[in-house]
Image 1 (tube, rainbow, N blue to C red):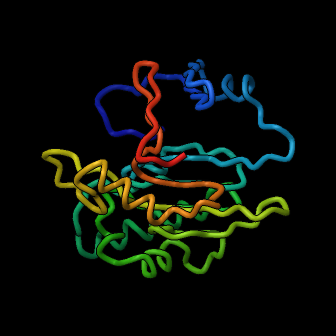
Image 2 (image 1 turned 60 degrees about the vertical axis):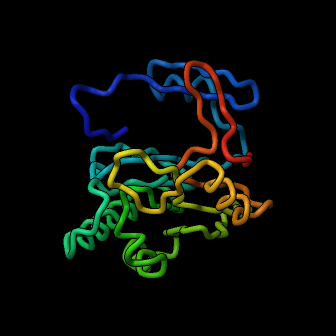
Image 3 (image 1 turned 90 degrees about the horizontal axis):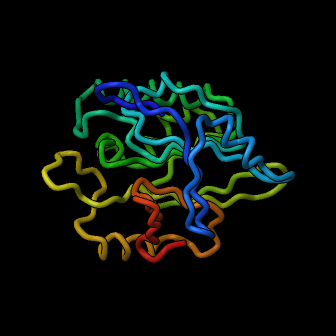
Length: 212
C-alpha cells in the first residue's frame, strides 16, 4: 500500500468475507494468501487504489487483471502540462506491471480525467497497448484464461465536506445510488468503483447504494 502520511503504515493485511461478514487480520499478505489460496481455474485480480503519484513504491504481484480504483493523482485540480505528464508517467508504470490486463477508474483527485474525457485518457494511458482499459461509467470485455470477463468501471464517489478534490463527486448517497443503478449492467462480472460498494468498520459490514 502506497501512502503519504506521517509515520509508517501499519503492517499486515485484512481479508473480509462478505458472505459471513467477518474480517480476518493477518501479519502479511503472504500469510493471507496461504490461508486463502486461489482455487484452481480462478482469475487473479490484483487491486490497488489511492496511490497519489506514489505508485512506484508498490511491489505489484503477478496477476491476470490489475485494477486501479482511482486517485492515482495527488492534487485534485488541473495543473496544466504537468497534469498530462503525470498521467503519461502513470500510464507507463501501469503498462510495465506483471499483470496481463490493466483496468483503471478515476477518483475524486483525478481532475485531469474529468477535464480530458475518457477517449483522451484512454489514449494516454494505453499508448497503443490493447490490454489497458480506462473505464468511465463504461464496460470492457477481457479475455482471461479462455473466458470472457465483463468489467464495469465508475469514477463516481461521495463529496467530502471541505475538500477541493471534487472530480466525479455526487452530493448524496441517494444521488450516487441512482448514478450507479442506472448504469451498472446486471451481467457485470466485476464492478470497479472509487467509492467502495461495501464498507466495514469496527467489524460491521455495510452494503452500499443497492449494488452487490
